[in-house]
Image (spheres, rainbow, N blue to C red):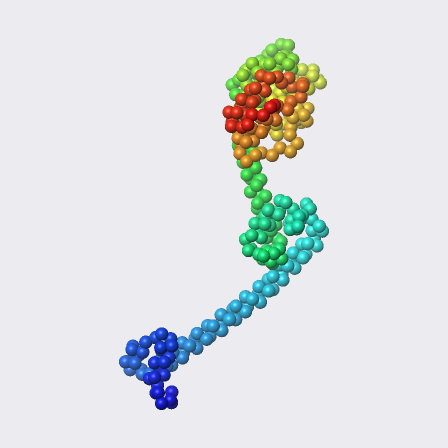
Length: 301
């Protein structure tokens, strides 16, 4: 401020550097000294803010390093716990990612969300427990969807099974007709009623009536006739359907992505009947026609 240029020239230089304007300040009663104080105080505030930001960035860097170490140590412990099994469910053998095929889909989703360049970077962002929680959540949603699909498919079965009114008439016939019709006659009777396919619940009721009227050991052939015509074979049970559950219940049935697709697949299984089931070309043609009506491809039964 003691230069030959004077304080006004210094003020001009300061404000021009900061793209400011002196016009408002140079006409105030405070004078140039007060303006200089204000400028330097603002500069000091900026420096303090920059220092705080620098300290915050440094703190975040230190925290990130510590946080990464915590994550990797947690995965190291999980790896020792897994002993060559999946790092999440600890049950099945893993692939190169360390997870089984089911848990691996959830891990891949988390991996992609981390935007990581390698497995280690991804594990540095996610704790093992977080993967476990996501796997459990996905599994719960899958189970809920499967249950809903099961219910929808069971309701769809009722559309192509024997109508309730016709079924009640069939029940009355079996209770009253004497002697009890043989299993071949029962197969013809189902076709004569115009609806030869049944639900598992309907087959159970028919078998209960027949057991009450037949001698012990004579029910086996009837179980073949009725259970082979059950659409929802996944609902067959040993208690209600006897040997029919053993012969006709699928070992690993899983519903398709829609009740219609599941129903078509169930109808296709109806063709895989034993000789004792008394299937003939008329029943096969009936099933093939249903498959076509549902939009499925007609295959040889």
